[in-house]
Image (cartoon, one colour):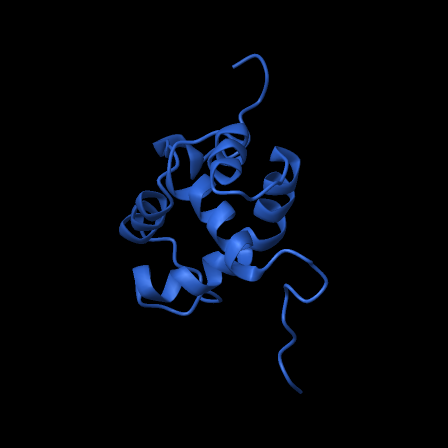
Length: 109
Protein backbone atom coordinates (compact mmCIF):
# COMPACT_ATOMS: atom_id res chain seq x y z
CA UNK A 1 0.00 0.00 0.00
CA UNK A 2 1.39 3.39 -0.94
CA UNK A 3 1.59 6.21 1.55
CA UNK A 4 -0.89 8.97 0.70
CA UNK A 5 0.12 12.60 0.57
CA UNK A 6 -1.44 14.37 3.60
CA UNK A 7 -1.53 17.67 1.67
CA UNK A 8 -3.45 16.29 -1.33
CA UNK A 9 -6.76 18.13 -0.78
CA UNK A 10 -5.27 21.53 0.00
CA UNK A 11 -4.86 24.12 -2.74
CA UNK A 12 -2.03 25.74 -0.78
CA UNK A 13 1.34 24.14 -1.40
CA UNK A 14 2.90 21.86 1.19
CA UNK A 15 5.89 24.20 1.52
CA UNK A 16 3.68 27.12 2.57
CA UNK A 17 1.79 24.95 5.06
CA UNK A 18 5.06 23.69 6.51
CA UNK A 19 6.45 27.24 6.70
CA UNK A 20 3.37 28.58 8.49
CA UNK A 21 3.26 25.76 11.02
CA UNK A 22 6.98 25.82 11.72
CA UNK A 23 6.97 29.63 12.14
CA UNK A 24 4.23 29.29 14.73
CA UNK A 25 5.84 26.37 16.52
CA UNK A 26 9.48 27.39 16.40
CA UNK A 27 9.26 31.08 17.29
CA UNK A 28 7.22 32.78 20.02
CA UNK A 29 4.72 34.21 17.55
CA UNK A 30 0.97 34.47 17.80
CA UNK A 31 -1.27 33.17 15.04
CA UNK A 32 -1.90 36.73 13.90
CA UNK A 33 1.85 37.43 13.78
CA UNK A 34 2.33 34.42 11.50
CA UNK A 35 -0.55 35.70 9.37
CA UNK A 36 1.16 39.11 9.11
CA UNK A 37 4.56 37.60 8.24
CA UNK A 38 3.05 35.54 5.46
CA UNK A 39 1.02 38.54 4.25
CA UNK A 40 4.27 40.51 3.88
CA UNK A 41 5.53 37.73 1.62
CA UNK A 42 2.37 37.80 -0.52
CA UNK A 43 0.62 34.78 0.99
CA UNK A 44 -2.97 35.58 1.94
CA UNK A 45 -4.21 33.27 4.69
CA UNK A 46 -6.04 33.89 7.95
CA UNK A 47 -4.85 33.13 11.45
CA UNK A 48 -7.58 30.48 11.71
CA UNK A 49 -6.05 28.69 8.73
CA UNK A 50 -2.70 28.60 10.52
CA UNK A 51 -4.43 27.20 13.63
CA UNK A 52 -6.16 24.52 11.56
CA UNK A 53 -2.90 23.56 9.83
CA UNK A 54 -1.11 23.47 13.18
CA UNK A 55 -3.66 21.12 14.71
CA UNK A 56 -3.82 18.94 11.61
CA UNK A 57 -0.16 18.74 10.55
CA UNK A 58 1.59 19.32 13.89
CA UNK A 59 1.63 15.61 14.79
CA UNK A 60 2.90 14.78 11.30
CA UNK A 61 5.82 17.18 11.70
CA UNK A 62 6.56 15.78 15.18
CA UNK A 63 6.87 12.29 13.67
CA UNK A 64 9.40 13.67 11.20
CA UNK A 65 11.39 15.69 13.78
CA UNK A 66 11.33 13.17 16.64
CA UNK A 67 13.90 10.70 15.24
CA UNK A 68 16.29 13.55 14.44
CA UNK A 69 16.09 15.08 17.91
CA UNK A 70 15.75 11.98 20.07
CA UNK A 71 17.25 9.35 17.81
CA UNK A 72 14.32 7.03 18.43
CA UNK A 73 11.16 5.78 16.82
CA UNK A 74 8.17 8.06 17.62
CA UNK A 75 6.02 5.03 18.47
CA UNK A 76 8.35 4.13 21.34
CA UNK A 77 7.40 5.75 24.60
CA UNK A 78 10.23 8.18 25.16
CA UNK A 79 9.55 9.61 28.58
CA UNK A 80 13.07 10.57 29.56
CA UNK A 81 13.56 14.16 30.70
CA UNK A 82 16.28 14.78 28.14
CA UNK A 83 14.10 13.76 25.21
CA UNK A 84 11.11 15.81 26.37
CA UNK A 85 13.27 18.88 26.94
CA UNK A 86 14.98 18.50 23.56
CA UNK A 87 11.62 18.40 21.79
CA UNK A 88 10.38 21.40 23.77
CA UNK A 89 13.52 23.36 22.87
CA UNK A 90 13.23 22.29 19.24
CA UNK A 91 9.68 23.60 19.07
CA UNK A 92 10.60 26.76 20.94
CA UNK A 93 7.33 26.88 22.86
CA UNK A 94 7.31 27.45 26.58
CA UNK A 95 7.81 24.31 28.62
CA UNK A 96 6.87 24.03 32.25
CA UNK A 97 8.21 21.25 34.45
CA UNK A 98 4.66 20.60 35.74
CA UNK A 99 3.37 19.74 32.26
CA UNK A 100 4.52 16.15 32.53
CA UNK A 101 2.73 15.53 35.81
CA UNK A 102 -0.33 17.77 35.27
CA UNK A 103 -0.90 18.45 31.57
CA UNK A 104 -4.33 19.97 32.29
CA UNK A 105 -4.31 22.04 35.45
CA UNK A 106 -7.58 21.98 37.35
CA UNK A 107 -9.47 25.17 38.14
CA UNK A 108 -9.12 26.44 41.68
CA UNK A 109 -5.55 25.28 42.20
